[in-house]
Image (cartoon, rainbow, N blue to C red):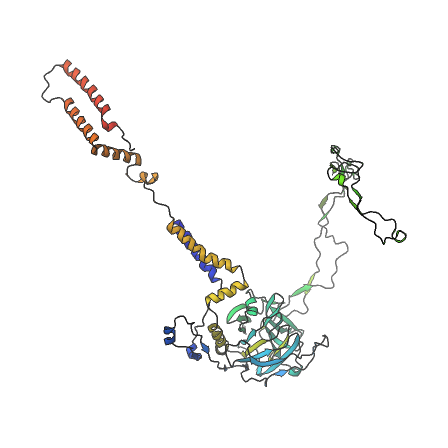
Length: 599
């Protein structure tokens, strides 16, 4: 039973290992309702040629259209940037060569597009500043409805260092989209960003101090989810931000929540400052004692304490090894060395041959003057120091006193941010060909979901239909991670070997039951059973039949007659005694008392 349990465990482990490789997933959404799917080939062709690969669905693209309340929607399917404004400003505090926002933008299809006709906004330049923006249909004001921001990003060439985040530009009289730069006021910044091995998904909002009138950036906590795949798989991903009137927020990637929290408790620095702060004018008193321990002032150095004793002394028990060559130096001049021809003794001094190890010392125990080795001095104590005791004047670590925070306020509704009237992309990237598509700003979840299904859902269906099979995915994954070959071998070969071992080489059941079984039943034990078998064989053999017949005759002879009772008491006693002796002798010679063993 145990081996079958182990077999099941091994098989389950193999299935788990295979599950580490992403399987081929086909999108089973309502393609018939929302998509026009044209299957290449026909069922008759498949029946005629079973070896042909399965047909690949061809998804026809249809531009999404916003249905319902929205403030901004852009799919770029018109192929122009008529509603967008390219910034012509220069970035301050930057070298003149790279200060200008001269990065190129184009509206085009993705390089490896699975949806012919689907266009988007593409960042074309690398190592340049890019800035482009577009006005909303009307300003968004934070009231009783949520804010939902949604757009798609595809890092077609991967990403080395750069961002793909969006800014919601604050509605102010100074807002000029032609002069859009990094210092342009914004209400919210949201989206992916990466540099080195730091993968981020930003959500930053600018909160206005109602007491001082100043703005301060508040950063949402870092997501717990691993974001690496979204930057490296070269697939189109849907980024969504939802900010609710109850001060909660959600950040989603591909309609899956990767981060959530509260604007009051899950941002840094916190929205509301502390009610008390440390007094900046408070100073530590000069006599404040922060020392928890001090040297004992009453301690004195012992009289026998020798501070001058060396830490090590020569070992008096050491003896010079036999064969030590006192008169031989450790190094001698190289006898084969020759003074260079260009050696000038006036300039270079007297020439001396380079030193080499003395060959005579190689076979000896040592050369040169012998010295006793040094050992630790048992009398060494070092410099005397007074022991440490608790400080009776210890007052603890000094801290400034607390005073009321003059800038304290309590804003219980940070959701009520500054209205914004435009969206913008202000980016620096070391990688080109970043694809943006299907921007949406709305306050209705249903509108956002419908827009996502009509846009990103279409891309997902097309990419899923074009994905390779399981075997191809496993091969690709193994090329990126060679250790997966070990997993494949163990997953396939190990269960097969174990099945053969367990099924074909099991132990034979023993003919004799275990000793413990006899304690539970009345079955005869092996030695008794063997005796019974031996007796049965004796009875069936000719010799056994003759012995049995002889035994019966002897029993008949020793049986006294029933009517023979006329003899006297003495004769009866003699006959009884002789009868008992005869019976004992017969029993001793009886084959029943013999244990006939098998050869």
